[in-house]
Image 1 (spheres, rainbow, N blue to C red):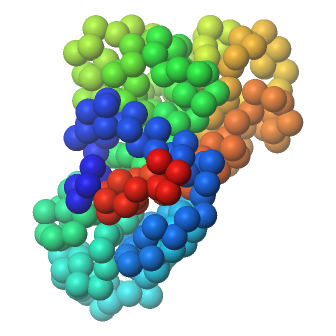
Image 2: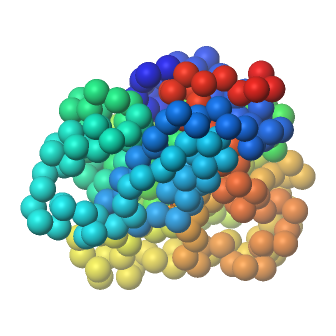
Length: 306
Ligand code: CP
């Protein structure tokens, strides 16, 4: 991935994705190594974030890079009317790589076309979240010992959930069977289902999570994306559609692991947190190692324990 932008998970071959996961394992063994001390990483967050921004900044800091940027565009000159293009052209001159989150679908691709340095998509609207996808793949491989031939349930807001879109597309490389659980209004878009169909993979759609919970290896819970709804009444109708409770896990497979990109609102009850099948906070930690691998790979730096 040297010197390349990371915009959509589909821009990369399965071999490239696996290479990042293998590299992330090296950083998990040894996360503090000053291999990026010559680099400046810019984090431009036009939308709120806790995990993506801070895990990127932690990853960069632990590798010795300097980090600049903003976590709130209202503190930048965007507030004065500056365009995204001019912001990118400017930050391009101050840094070696741009990590950007933006509410508009396609904005990351646009930024990568404007910039002469690599751009990493940290989430563009309801479209893609490729770095979350890589840490999801890392977490799946780590907990299941493999990526191939798994049953995965994707639960919640499959329409607006960008993490679901990226993960579905990536898991199509690995012969997954998909269990798509959502309210009728929030089904997986046909543009994403197309990837499943092209690979002749199986998918099943449900509104009731209990119809498939005992069949799956991975239960990927997601938040209903309030900020993407144009009508607040429509959000109110579906906001509590799924609430996973500990007692619902009684007859699930022993190898089941529960993932969630976080933040959660109330779709996973806190009584699940101490269940050994709950993996979402370890998943968030894996984000640091995976983002170290992404930075090192794009900036062309090798880990010292290669
Ligand atoms: N998973 C994720 O993107 O979390 P943040 O919104 O906190 O970055």
